[in-house]
Length: 135
Image (cartoon, rainbow, N blue to C red; front, side):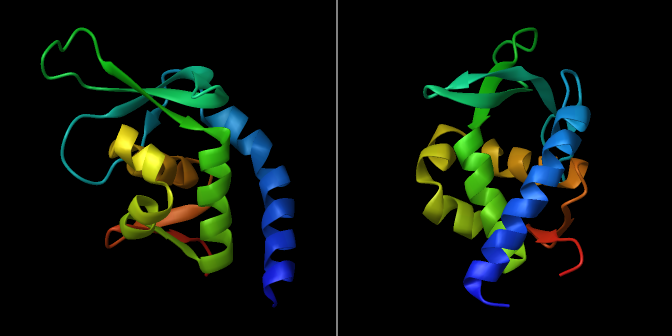
């Protein structure tokens, strides 16, 4: 399958996946996480850097009663989604190199994006990377 055909496949799958995201990624949902540290919890949909974004909470060691808020914009989800659909994986190395603003804001954004891919059935976590199911 050529690059254009793979891109069209990804866009069609994305449209089908929208309802899965809205149903599974709801306030209070715990985002899967595979390494140490506290849990990531969905707060709600909001805005980040003037875009619609998923806002999630991470533990705040300085004030455990007031978790820190982080966010992933729709454009960031789309960029990561295109990556995993076209190349079969979403890795930390690729995230750090190609999603620099998101990586700079929060290293946990990689885990949150990949965990959401797991929640909606797009990917599985394996050896430090999120791998597209069926690839």
